Length: 330
Figure (cartoon, rainbow, N blue to C red):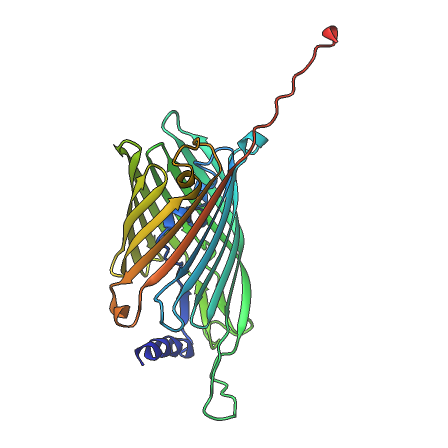
């Protein structure tokens, strides 16, 4: 009953004709999803390699209409092929109740060397966002109710911008997503404020940072990460810490302010199989799982949130050096 009341409250807002701001997803493994929210980090830290990472999140398990998200990021550093910086593409899908949002963005970051300290990435992402409503109503009579919104889908231009600095031990970043903040409604020809349903892809602002404490024990590291997310109306804080054992296994805890606490587990599969003996620049496969316990008012109806992550990196072969022969010695 509580679950139904939760959804009814959402639909009441829709029926009231208000413009609802679509919130960006909350991801526990956000350290593997930085490019989609900060294009400045595209290709940084993966020199002469291509990496693909995918995350699926089922939030508030057992709550009908609860959010679920899927993310796919593919990025590469192609400097040895004459591309000055990193390029990448991000796909992500977010759904809550009757709303669906699908976004595809092409990212580019210019890598500016900062002496011996590290690199500053200056990045821009350009793409499209499709947002729509697909309701299923069961009216009490066979006569259609004109006050109920019907299905619609619209596609608008989207853009992100970010700055990202990375050294050997730490990183910091500032970024903004959905810069155009496009509006979506069921009747684009209607005067402002008169359409039955209004949705918007709210502009978000991000601040991120992290530090790696190396060799806590020989070969073991501790990694701490922070992510601040805001659309001006609401601000959230994500904190996470992971213990990295011999570059093979990791375990950690996460906390999202006034929302959830979670546990993370993962493994570098190829390193684990080979006992950690693989060289640093070897193709890698990382898998991870997290479970979040809800600590807000939904705790009485939610069974927590599940998240799966997979990342694969392929190191590009070096370009063969062609030996030139002086005509005199032919």
